[in-house]
Image (cartoon, rainbow, N blue to C red):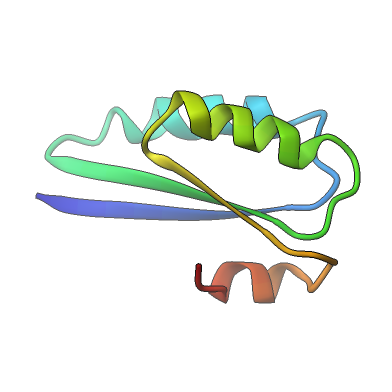
Length: 82
């Protein structure tokens, strides 16, 4: 089965992280014959963004979280490797 990977950089996004996840999953579940994964990249946020993303990942096996020690910018976030 084919897989869709969605990489989402997050920087100080505690107010919208859950809503972003909910909307992306809602859309991905409509695509037939594809598995999916969502890779959130915490780009050095010091608010609760990482905590929220880790909770989402604990409850959804299709979600992975990568966390940077500081802000590197969204270009680095979408090209990083775990």
